[in-house]
Length: 47
Image 1: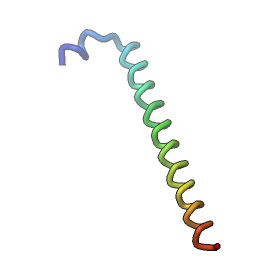
Image 2 (image 1 turned 45 degrees about the vertical axis):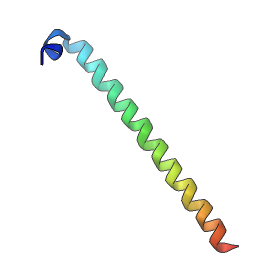
Image 3 (image 1 turned 180 degrees about the vertical axis):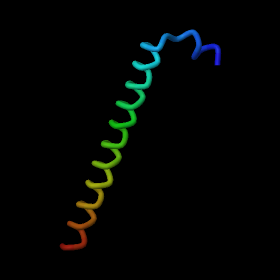
Image 4 (image 1 turned 90 degrees about the vertical axis):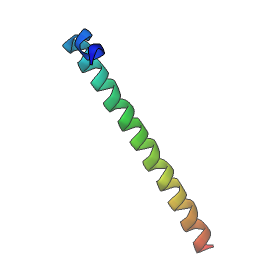
């Protein structure tokens, strides 16, 4: 809790923004991975 009170609102905003960006990147990465595996599986099935 002390750590949070030491940070200014601006720093907290930056941290929150970074966390959201990172989360978005991970979600996009996971989505592309699952999409890729689905396409690969579909290609193997249709052969």
